[in-house]
Image (cartoon, rainbow, N blue to C red; front, side):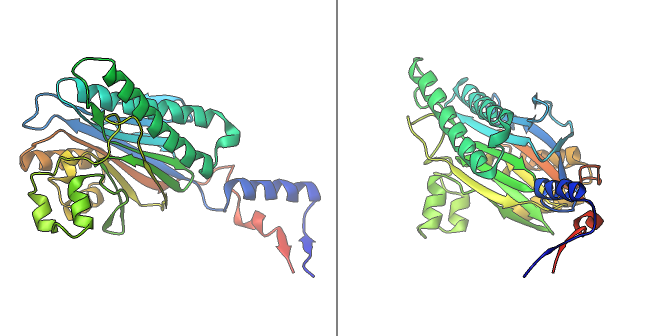
Length: 312
């Protein structure tokens, strides 16, 4: 029969066990450094993209472009939205979507009992649905705004786990060990035709239907959002971007830039500049976030403490 071998006082062992359960392992927690940049491009008259970098633990919403922010992964939130609808409609829709999503996530964060993966997934889905309803109602109440909408890609972090809520054709990539993995699926006509084999990748690049979305926040009263979960590692780089970037910059180029540039702001600048060099036919927005293992602190369980509780 297994038994506990007690090497220290019972009270100290209980305290160690609580710390193990709270932190999950003896490894120091991840932290994330994030920088965002947005550009109108060379063709459009105004920028209808929108981004936010948020620290839910400090109730801070930030939008300065090119400024690096260090955030604990337990409460980091990154959002990119790409508005559509012409005039000021797209700009309004993208801002509404991003800010509604953030407001919903703040409500989730304030309730400590709901800071679980299941509740976070539920909250991301609910946030996308709330944003959709608000944009749809706003457009229906104003002449000339019918069809106003936006994409939205929101990445929320809970410890080492990344949760991505997604609608539209903005994208999220994880760059790891020299390779990029796209972790969102485009809700577009071209992607559908690719998936069904009716279009080749070569034909998709020049398709006249590249901008046709099958899902977006706002145009319809109801929406189905995707939510995915990913385990992050120290050294990983997360990239969120609008189609103004990914349609001009190949995945291999994206990998080269974010892995060779030590400064995240320089990586953002280089990505945006490359998209503009290729024509800048749309607004360009990118968020680049690098994950690092934080320095060990007092809250981290030491390996020697874990061995104070053994079984035999």
